[in-house]
Image (cartoon, rainbow, N blue to C red; front, side, top):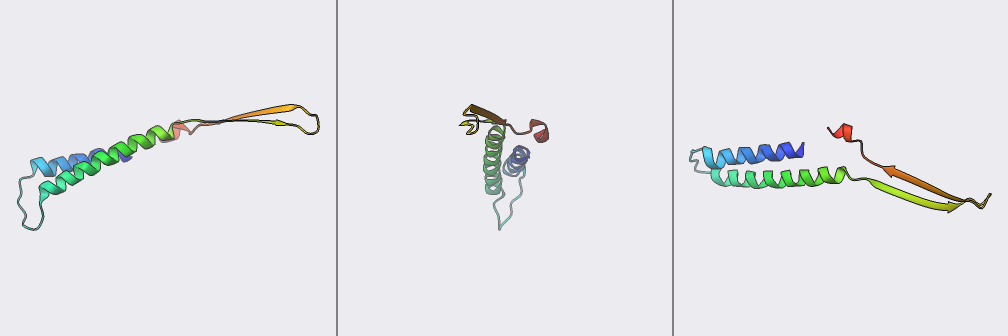
Length: 87
């Protein structure tokens, strides 16, 4: 969702900066367009970073000794986010 919001902010900013040719006394639409384009690029990059971070996996391995039988027990667990929920 943040990638789409970044693209939308960038597109709205580009329209304000380059396509709209309206002069308003109290606001500079070109500057607002450039600010929106910068914010859109930042949100887009943050969305990509968060997407890459979400898809990482985590693996944990623990080795303990069972006190009753003196056997070594190794437990491995892997947690991975559900990829189908994000799509």
